[in-house]
Image (cartoon, rainbow, N blue to C red; front, side, top):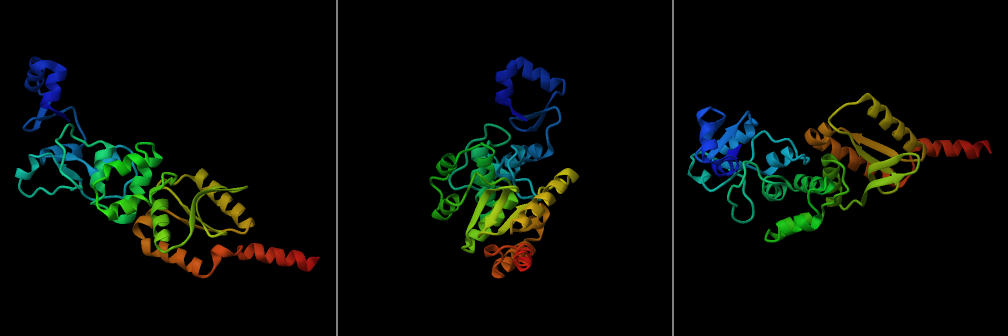
Length: 276
């Protein structure tokens, strides 16, 4: 998806006219043309007079985002003239459209007003973890944002390896629960979250792989042998069964699981000393 100005610069006016004549360049709206078979969400954004942005653009760039049913578009200036068009907003004025899809720094600004607090933190975590932006660069993009957004940026952490992990961490921090992320445990490896001394929380990805499944269960057994209790949740559970996930975690914490070894280890120790 290209602007007419871009194609003229690349092909010259004669070459651009030839592409239109031969059907190579297909007009989507005034000043914008499709070449080949571009993704439908890009076509939709341009056709509506906007730019693919927010979580739709971030997902295209490889950033973790929660699933969204709609295409997220921001205005390019002309879009306001099109009836029934709905657009994402950011803090501040919209930039002119230079491309059919926004870059990561621009798209993340629009995500701040489309996502809930935990989802936004998870997206920023992913942006940093993937190396697209540093924390300082994200802070700069939101230098004119309200204090509530700045407070959320203080809670972002680029060490987080997945969106579900970030969402759980954000929830626990909101409950004033001390939680550490990406903790290395001998014989177990690196775990997503460690609450207190003995409660491990792991989040699995969307894809199921038997080899990874077996590896994760072996890690859980190794952790149990050391006195840890592991709560493991799938991506879909975190996204679609949030109440179940948070209730399970808080019930474990209320029972003191995070501060004491697992019952299996405790019983083993009791048997050991009894036999002595």
